[in-house]
Length: 141
Image 1 (cartoon, rainbow, N blue to C red):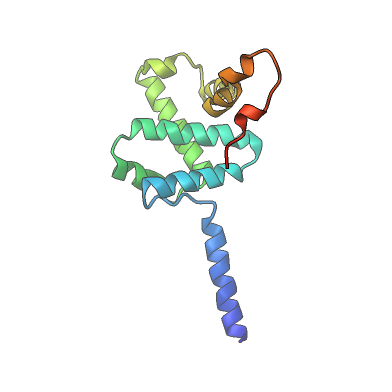
Image 2 (image 1 turned 90 degrees about the horizontal axis):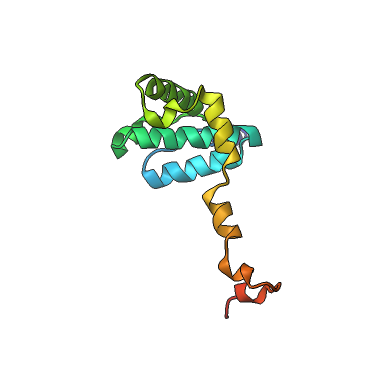
């Protein structure tokens, strides 16, 4: 009984230790994994992590190569890859990155931009009728 408990504890520890690593068996599992990791990061580390993911995704068009690149990476390892990618693209004269002096400036500007979801939520045209009403957001049963 004691051995079984130790084995189960060991399996739990292995499963928990992989929770902070990207599971890139498929694009869908990678996106779920990235979302999960991002939600469990401290607030200040979320934007660099997300920017790094999308910077790498933009750079590596081949799905299999992209998945191989991010497989098993921790948040810190992914951010390091993103920084390296930013540095290489800026040095090569990529116009999208030439406007930034360094990685920190790009992250700072990214943090200032509202996310697409926040913009979509706040831009409901029915909110501009001039009177407060919430019943238009109710769904029929």
